[in-house]
Image (cartoon, rainbow, N blue to C red):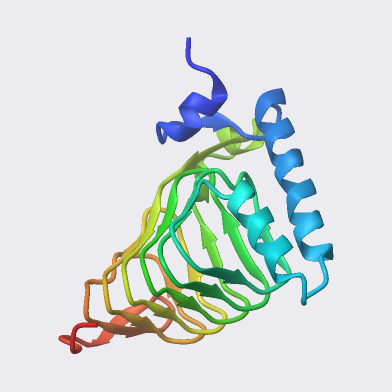
Length: 189
């Protein structure tokens, strides 16, 4: 029989609210986020070390302005030269992968978790998770919300305030709610 964590990572419905293992892992990550957010801004080395210990993979330079919040941490992978401004939230029940040279403006969220439409299932604490992938050389504007299962292609720009509910192809400028491509074939990198 699969554990709730195994179901979560497999994209199946799982018990997010009552499973002791998942509750403990989220609590541990909340403690690490609290430690990170309480560090002095000038404590660059300590901040970077804590991020490298909290996140699943960090390939190169990383700077996440405080405050930063995530659910598990271990499902987040970032490439070279990752920068995120204030108030980044990542609900990483499924993998969230950022390529190289990703820049994220303030107040952005990446949410892999979703809930069943059926109220009986939802009221049981069940949810599902779908991965989010952000390519290389991507700029995410202020207040952008990225929903479960979305892929944003290389060299794309997502305009401020957008709600990204579908994949965005590479070399695109996309804006709005729902987010739509308004310009294609940007020059590469």
